[in-house]
Length: 482
Ligand SMILES: Cc1cc2nc3c(=O)[nH]c(=O)nc-3n(C[C@H](O)[C@H](O)[C@H](O)COP(=O)(O)OP(=O)(O)OC[C@H]3O[C@@H](n4cnc5c(N)ncnc54)[C@H](O)[C@@H]3O)c2cc1C
Image (cartoon, rainbow, N blue to C red):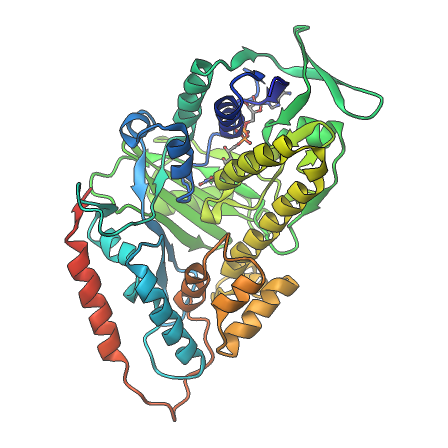
């Protein structure tokens, strides 16, 4: 690959694109330009387990990158106060381990029995290993030398430091870098982008342009006018507030997601501070009231820490690769940060694009279809959190229960309520590649989304649950504390 590539934007998306392109195409001429006047979004501190692949792919060890990014391990997410069903006020979304391979069929069986009205304990917190480890303040990495249990885990990190780390590594790999604010964009007769001009007159030409300009979407939207599909019909949140707080010494390796009056708050432990934020809908709550609510939750005053207010553009472009432009990151779309999926999308977009681009233009349509399907199905998973809530304390949560759902999600819920096999349906719809069946089951069972008990069905399954818990307690001895 001897092409010349211009990347517009130096946020996490821009630098991830730069490093993965430089790694894959060492002879390409790659130039990243970013504005020193337009800040990066500055949030995005949680990942999915897929981020580990990035560092594995680049042969960068955790010992190298994690300390530089104030990073910590993440075993999963606790969702608190989303449900008011007794016993379901909180549930842990587990990242899976090898141990869970035996447990998932049991969990699914119990959840299906519960859907048929049997009095079985089907709350996910009783089943998965990473829940046990998290409660014991243990990371999901077996003690050195003991590889008998393979576990998935993710990370928390300082987004700005991760961007800086990737920037230094990209420059080492030969990526050129400059500062400049793009003021004008010239197109060729066929609509392709020809060149970008900065406010100081620097001109950048290239064969391929990558739009990593964040919510600005300068190339994909403002220049190429690529249609944008909004998700506001079933994802109401369009605003966020971020306020850091002091470091906590003993933290569980998890993200906490607490439902508030018109959205939810994240709490993410880093090695030097806790990242906090509130994602809410401006249609239901003012910025002032939302800030006050977040401050009350985390106990941080205005004098101690200012708040950062962020507007979110929620939805996706119709074509992520349009003309000679690829959109990566917030410019291509954003679902919302509930499951920390944005950087996962960034990685997936870049890796899928590399493959498609190497095979030629004929793959454009298939690439765009693939990205759109991923956006839609992950959107459905996020929508399910809101749809499943049982709160009555605000108009926001009541309206969330009425949100329209896609035909795909409608079908999944039909299978669930009839006690059928959700994993078969997820496979049939090719959705399990984004979220495995255990995640869907954990969400529905964790919020207590079940038909009522049938008083005629009285079997006792408590022995099964006790033996599952005993087994995972024994296994937990192989893992060490943080
Ligand atoms: C509230 C919130 C919480 C989030 N939480 C998570 C999370 O937990 N996990 C996760 O994976 N993701 C999360 N995300 C998403 C994550 O922050 C982004 O996906 C990630 O930071 C990538 O952003 P970006 O690089 O696309 O855009 P940005 O960080 O906004 O970077 C844009 C870049 O473009 C440059 N630029 C813009 N216009 C111009 C111009 N005219 N000329 C030159 N340069 C220009 C800017 O200078 C900047 O360098 C969250 C997002 C939000 C809003």
